[in-house]
Length: 131
Image (cartoon, rainbow, N blue to C red):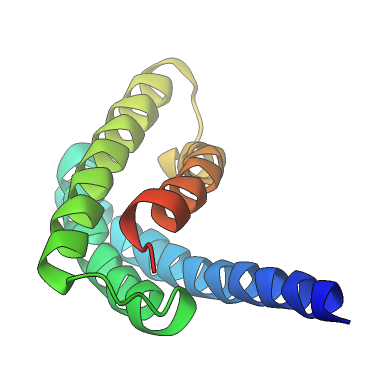
């Protein structure tokens, strides 16, 4: 019974993480589209959208998903270091691929972000929001 409870607990965190990630992703994509249409600049649109969606994501992940008791300021520095690295990888990958593939950058951004999502879960769980 104890083993079963641990399995449910692990999936519970993963499900919460996934829901927060989906909400953050939707916010990021919506803001990316708005900013990209306003300025027609993929890099700037990515940065602005990511800063807003990442702040939303950090607060929910720290307080609701991982329920971290680590010092908030340290977790924040680690988290935003990860966000900056992810943002740069995303922005430059999408920008690079958009120059060679004649489709809407949003459709390029989606699979790029999915790959980064998997990496982020592991980094956040084991390095940023440790209990």
